[in-house]
Image (tube, rainbow, N blue to C red; front, side, top):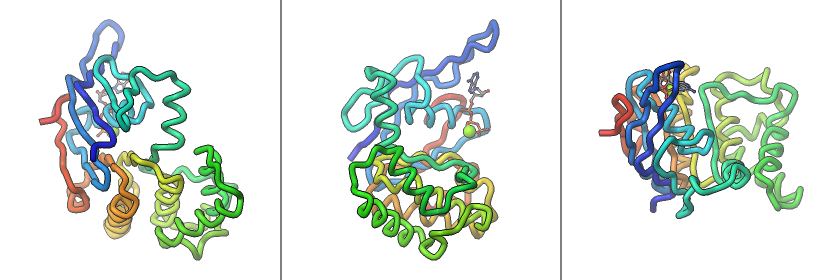
Amino acid sequence: MTVLAIDDVRKTFNNGEVAEDILKGVHLALNAGEVTALVGASGSGKSTLLTIAAGLQQASNGEVIFDGHNMTDMSAEQIRQIRASQFGFIFQFAHLVPFLTVEEQLLLMLDVAETTLSKKAQLQEVDRILVLVGMSHRKQAYPASLSGGEKQRVAIARAIIHRPKVLFADEPTASLDSQRSKEVMQLIHDMTKELQIATLLVTHDEEMLIYADRIIKMTDGLIN
Ligand SMILES: Nc1ncnc2c1ncn2[C@@H]1O[C@H](COP(=O)(O)OP(=O)(O)OP(=O)(O)O)[C@@H](O)[C@H]1O
Ligand SMILES: [Mg+2]
């Protein structure tokens, strides 16, 4: 089932006098329970496409349809609500809040997603997700005491605790060694299946492509 559809998306940046066409009419459908890997040379437009798909910036032309609703027609507030409650994000670095425990980071995320769960149910959700990512034993830990791989596991937990429909992962393993990268990708793959998320993964690392269901190559602003 298609959760997010990108239809003829174009993006032009005005760098001084020159207008540069960075995306030149991209079509892409993200399906529930599938990891779609987006690969391509540096500067080919991968992150630009991901941020447009996630409603973080606007396309110059074309449409992004989430769950049958055209995001192009929505107000900034409607897009913010979808981003907070229906999307999850993982980046190269975990960006955990240094003065919050693992448990507190996750409770904060439920707050951001405007959860209607009771406090007790929220604590249960935190426990459930920590079991899924294998981090229950570090619930009361602060980020400074976690390894790089553990931090990324918490970042994954934070990205999916509110049960998003779409997960955006831009180079989630770029700061990790080969073994940790594989573990993190296995986890993203497993969570995508378990929670039936539509995952868009941008990666430079060819070794990570075995965890993808589909591989899409971007060349010079186009998908071929
Ligand atoms: N806000 C912006 N203003 C002007 N140009 C931009 C802007 N954002 C991106 N670009 C340009 O668009 C092109 C594509 O950038 P993008 O970040 O999407 O590439 P990428 O494929 O993610 O590259 P990388 O693999 O290095 O992360 C680059 O030439 C970049 O300089
Ligand atoms: Mg990029």
